[in-house]
Image 1 (cartoon, rainbow over the protein chains, first blue to last red):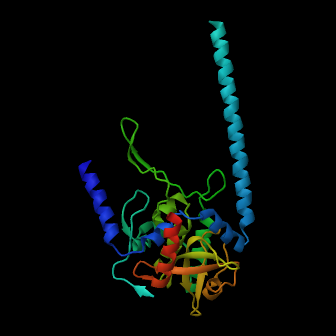
Image 2 (image 1 turned 180 degrees about the horizontal axis):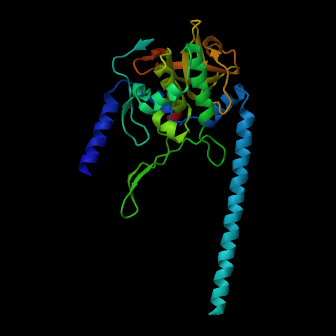
Image 3 (image 1 turned 30 degrees about the horizontal axis):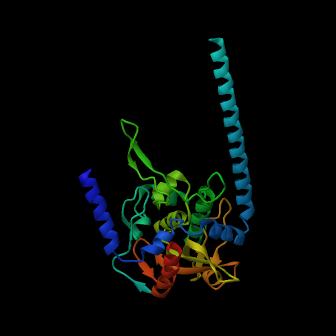
Length: 87
Length: 218
């Protein structure tokens, strides 16, 4: 563990002494307005509709999943009650 | 424009490991070399078109269940005996993926697809580089966010912008003047550019945008 920590520290010190600008590079990790920027690009290239459709499909799938989970939970509760009564 | 002998370090790769920014153009990687060879490009301009086609056609932008760009990462490597993981980054920030990792995951945000496309182009000896910059609203000049794209030189001697986050259709090549001077709905404002061998930056723009980023963080 000690070695691993030392290695991590080495990596951090390398970053701090190296040539900047790390802030611009870090901005590429999607920390700032990723959706806003990406939507503007997709809109500019006329492909926003494709992403809106994809978003809708994923939301529908998530709703189906939520319903299925809720149904399963109810089934589990009912089964538990039946078993308890049978005892 | 300034260039430096030592390029900046990227310490937010997938596992938090460290690379030079220029390491993200993997011209000697066997997987990427095989993909580039398979493109069957006949000349410089054909290579540009095919590299963009494969980037836009084969990759996807990562989207979470809400349909928003998924920039989070959670890496687990080596399941340990007690159920914990030996490496569990668990950070919210996205980690830059190397082009050969993109070739496997088939998903990546702007920086990933730009490095992937540039790698293919550089293997095919095209004069190309990755550009990191800001995206501005053409009307209001407001910064919408930060972005990465590719610039490649065609045989007519002109530089073209390759937008690598449009999937699955291949977008047209855009003359850089059109993209940089606001002839589209958005303005691409370049700050840094690099390939496997070179790194350059615009010091004035770096200062300007770092100030914006500092304000955003604060």
